[in-house]
Image 1 (cartoon, one colour):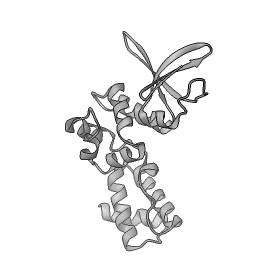
Image 2 (cartoon, helix red, strand yellow):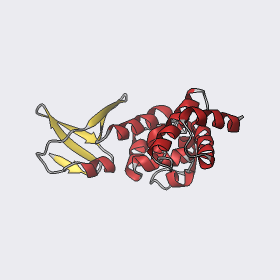
Image 3 (cartoon, helix red, strand yellow):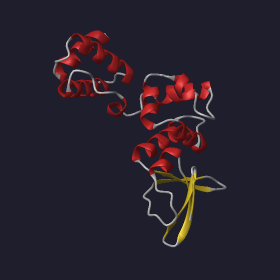
Amino acid sequence: MEALPNRLVVEAGGVGYQVFVPISSYDRLDPRIGTEVILLTHLHIRENAHTLYGFATAEERDIFLLLVDRVSGIGPTIAMAVLSGMPVERFKQAVVKSDVKAISTIKGLGKKTAERIVLELKDKVGVTETWQVVEGGDAAGAAGRDAELGLLALGFKQTDAHKAIRAVLEKSPTMAAEDLIREALRGLS
């Protein structure tokens, strides 16, 4: 029916629904009228409106929900601006690395909002999706990820666990996950 970079009108059961989408989702869709699309949606209900948001991937929807539900002062409009302004993987990396400057380059976000996003999401963004595979082969990368998850389960912050594991792997890149955890714990104490 209608396709613009930030919204679509999709037909379901003979009814047209206006769905707001981030540009990243729009780029993945075939915007030709009459084409079948699959969207993951979120219905945001307010006193005066029911607004439907659509996403091409579960990852986009999850970041949207994290922003809206976990960051004070962030509503659907700003969450959509984040998704439209930066790829999901880059956003996750920026949060993990506390890269406020990169996040604040998104149109509509200032430095204070970017700082609040980093502060409130830093320990909530997925671990294995945001960190690059540790150099040294698949076995070392898997052991590193397992060790990081182990440290998280012990209650350490995500960034502290990542730094500790990386420091151990720089010295001994072929350690098993159990040994990595043990050595990382020594470095964290």
